[in-house]
Image (tube, protein in one colour):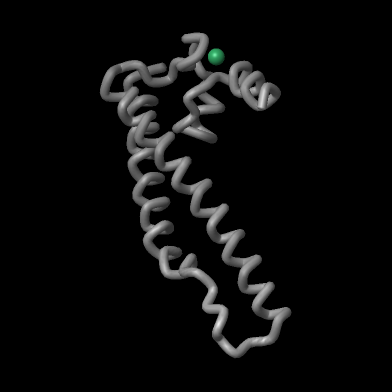
Amino acid sequence: MTTIQCHELHQQLLRLRDQLKALLRNSAERVQPVDLDKPIGRLSRMDEMQQQSMAKANRRAIEQRVVQIEAALLRISRAEYGVCVACEEEIGPGRLKARPEAPFCLNCQAEREASR
Ligand SMILES: [Zn+2]
């Protein structure tokens, strides 16, 4: 990977982190527990609870992505970025462009998903 590529991905990671953190801030009030005393019908209450559990799952996914981005930024500062953390092969530029925080190459990612 060239210095310019690394610089671009670094900027991309910083932007992504800011965007995701803003998203987490904005969705914070939507994951308050459902108020069971609120006089609403049974169906809409179930709807509300379902939406909340979806919002929670969504938040967890975003939080995990932020953790991965932080780890990627750390690897950049240690000049270890762009290399798979499992097999130390280079991660393809196409994959890094699509998911700059990716810690694994495609092979290792597939292996991890298969062993889950
Ligand atoms: Zn690998």
